[in-house]
Image (cartoon, rainbow, N blue to C red):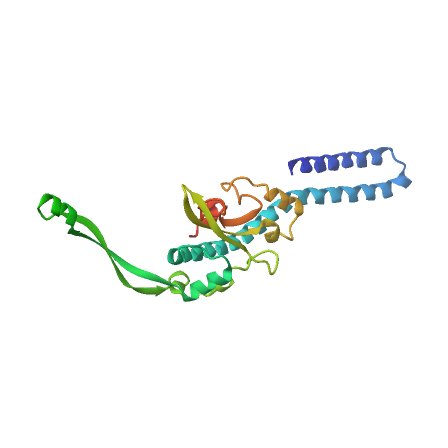
Length: 246
């Protein structure tokens, strides 16, 4: 962007110089037409200079507003998927399953108590009563998932819809397993392409946005996502600034 600005400013200065030379050396009958044309060119170049600075500023403002809405929906998806795994042992494979789980699923309320019980083997071995530590788990009842996660809100019914960007777009949801130390671990990923969220913005700025390689400075990669199909992770690829209100 800086290169563009320098080129345009240079062109403006050159044009102004040409205007002065025309004013000094060109015959009067040709001056008016040339002067008008050159001043139009100066105004055009000035406009291009302004837009080269203003467009990225405007783009970043729109981007941040849209990303904030998209990320909030992805957080709802993550919360719902985490609850689904807690209750069922795996993540939901589609939004129909996830919404149905929220509406019908229940968390089990338990109480854990430390206690000691007789260790029969050691008692027999030593000839005296020997005890070992144990934990007793009591089921206290059940509570609806919907009440625990969303209380009086029904936004979970529309969390599959991308809330900013191209109208009618939906998040992509995947579910599967990865293996770590021969252990099968459930994973999921919810995502949307940046092209969808920024569909109506300058294509060059969108291309640059998709090249972000670190979640410290921006949303990493060509999509906004939470979770991963390659590793056991439920984190998002956005910077911490989007989590300040959590």
